[in-house]
Length: 250
Length: 371
Image (tube, rainbow over all chains, first blue to last red; front, side, top):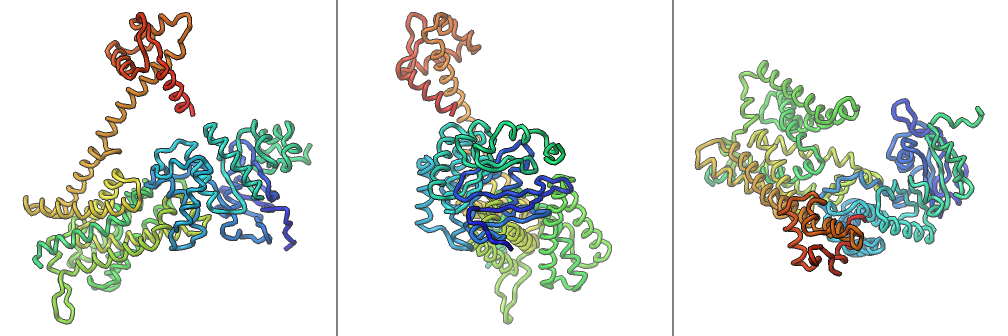
């Protein structure tokens, strides 16, 4: 195995994920740079969520591999990655308070059977405070707005104290206040040299919020610094229907 | 202990035993799986009986539990093919396995005491006749010990793995990422449900097992926002239903299991109506209050939009307002009165005008509603 380049947080090599015989991701090569905020941008059905789930090992892969910092191992060490799923992926009528849900972010550090301690709870409170949700800790989660739910999920990821944060559409359907809270969180994470990968759909804000961008439509169209890669031409290629991306043909 | 007292002890133990894993069935939206399991385990009992020819063999217990877990696996595997929904998969698997068991019993075990009626309704009244004899001494009805053992098993499992079960039920993806093996937990829980069902249905029958597993958790769900409290309330409701059901059965001289199942349903509907926050009555009341508040906001916003405009007299006129909003006269007057009492609007020469506090409220409402 070749040496793992320390500039990267995650390296994806020749990754293919297929549902039956139809590829959702086809032969993906991607290097996710360490300490940067990266957007994954592409049309619906481009495999953005699939990419995140495959990196997390939640989906069977048809080919290829994923390697993680610091030593290039194929399995991330525990607590290396925090995952923020789409907020619609859980049942918000579950009997739990905001503080309960944020505390779940500490479970990975606790391991089996051990319960959250006072310091875990304090950490959860601090994270809620950071996201402007301090007044809601006793609130039943079913009473939250979409933006508040998203902030609860981000607070939960924050207490995981990970090195890499994978976020699936955190900006989807949120109010201006939540959007602001997420952006300042992203900047703080970058300041602390964390790596953040965000599935993003709003093309208007890519230049403002992100350092790095990956354009994807089943295949990788291009990846790199935003000012180099996020061009009109590349976007046209990305949003053209999948199957029009063979470079050698033209 | 009198037989009556023993019956009540058994019923309370079984009710609490069923309520604990039942909470997770309800939260995982798998309630009807309990119906399937309570029936298909019969196949396990029958098959194990054919192997041992002994109705008292512990193999019957484990055979049944195994078929219970197998039912869950088969159902979920079928629905994962996406060729049918999860409910349809239950509709296929449950009758198939249950009917095979019934055919086997009627064809090959006709002379043995494996009675299909007893399976559905149980024979709680006869439970005290089956004694546990230890060192030649009668130490009570056997069902008390079976139910007690299962209660201990369920309580221990849930106490030890409470955090893990909570996470795997709320967010199985995160549970998987954090290494908490949600699939293993799922099947451990299903094993527990199956064991509970086998142990319980001998005493109380499959219908009551379903009622005990689903009724109290659904009732508790209406009353609390906390998983721990939901578990405690479920246990409490289960016990209460069992005791009230027994008294009812004794009073009217009718089926004990039937009365307990009826009590479970009735207590659910009672709470469904009067629960303080999520109950039907309180929800209706809240909705009406909300409608009035929203009408107030709408009226204030309407006034704000037309404030100082050339057609203000027409849009905000006491006598013309209702035609613009298309509200009926009584309703319009009621909302206007409420707002003028709250000093959020005043009437000046037949035209409604916002007061400073009314203007403040409409701006606040706007910010809140539009995010």
